[in-house]
Image 1 (cartoon, helix red, strand yellow):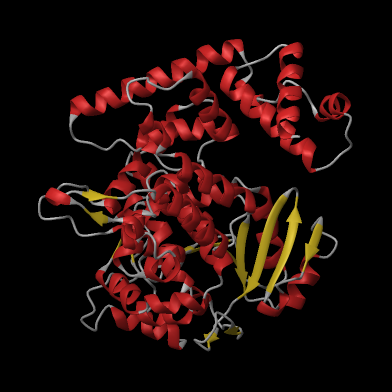
Image 2 (tube, rainbow, N blue to C red):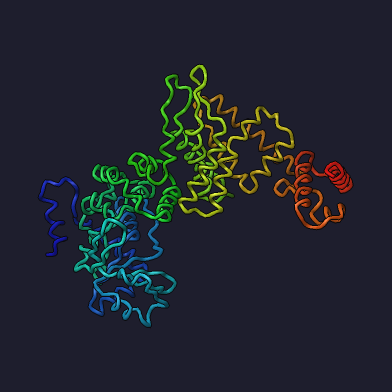
Amino acid sequence: MTPSEERTVARSGTGDDRPSGEPVPPAVQATVRELVDLSPVLTRLGARFTAAGFEAHLVGGSVRDALLSAAAADGGRAGTSTKPGDLDITTDARPEQILDLLRGWAGSTWNTGIAFGTVGAEVSGVRVEITTFRADRYDRESRNPEVAWGDSLVDDLVRRDFTVNAMAVSLGPDRTVTDPFGGLGDLLAKRLRTPGAAVDSFADDPLRMLRAVRFVAQLGLTPDGEVVAAMTSLSGELARITPERVQVELSKTLLQDSPRAALELFVDTGLADVVLPELPALRMEIDEHHQHKDVYTHSLTVLDQAIELEKADAEAESPDLVLRLAALLHDIGKPATRRHEARGRVSFHHHEVVGAKLVRKRLTALRYSKEIVEAVSRLTFLHLRFHGYGRGEWTDSAVRRYVTDAGDLLPRLHKLVRSDSTTRNKRRAAALSETYDSLEQRITEISELEDLARVRPDLDGNAIMELLGIGPGREVGEAWKMLKDLRLERGPLSREDAEAELLAWWAARS
């Protein structure tokens, strides 16, 4: 018996109240076998490794989802989709032996991860990653493990992040399900635990704490007390993780159907203080007169409402990362702009301007693409403009500028502004909704007469240069901007009127 197996057996008799491995119900075993057999790639790969005298086991998220679906079917409940994407396999074969087994059989192979025991392959259009049993140790100064081959499947499973991911299905003839740490029970109980001590797991790889946050959103799991305590005590270790990896996990969390509980865990454990401090900074104390809302709770509610509007729009992208980031971060300029006014009132003047700058700085630091950074920053900057609309006092010029400044972000801006109404006063909420309905109707009416999505001056650069008798340069740009402002103010002009305005501007300028 290996040391890992001894620890697994010992846990059930040491007073540790955490569930250890339990037999997987026969009906679930049978259903999982059937699910695995539906994949010709897995069947053929398993036969190939077995014939060569090696073990091969399907591991990772595909096993988790297959077991969840099988257990749900056994209990008469609807399961999740079990059709796998990329497949993760673990084996006792060494990397060079894996390559030999794949040679001449897989369509293509790659060995970029071979130093870590991983060989990649594509078989019949399916991507497979096959990794030798691992029993790594970490230096705890980086995420780089000291690679060591394991002696058994349990050695490999104990080093995985959570029990729900520490299960395996044999690709041998028996299709045995191996669940040494009670992952299936945790999955059905909606519980998130680590195979070993949580503090050791997270100290080895702090990124696992962000994965815990994601699994709360993705699978609806609740972390047990040990996991929460370890995340809280080790939150500072997240600084060891590169911004790119933090961004990937944060994005995956936001793109889930209901990320709110996960974000609350992110903030409550102190992880957000390390990588997104602007979010917990929104938890400003409410003044004694309760004259303003808790900005943090408000922001989470805005995110909830934006997701609902996003899902309801059949023509919109969903899930929409830009909209969700904007909903979560649109008010991050408030802490820096908060002012206490007379009679207990609180103001946040120009928080949209400050917020847009903070958004750009933070999302850039998290290595988001330039397109995402600029889009979320612009939505943050524009989210308050509607409040100047009043009861419809905007001129047609102001409506044009609203549409033009939003550009292709206008559908998202509509959702963000509507979601930003979190008042409990039903009359006020209805009035705000009706007012925004009015603005959208005006946009529609003006758009039927003009192409608001592509507002351009009535004269292009060539016409400007020809009429003024000048060549390319700064003056052409200034003339173009003047004509665009005029177009926004007055709507489309005839060619004659546009030329007259340009000549008058040029004469006055000269």
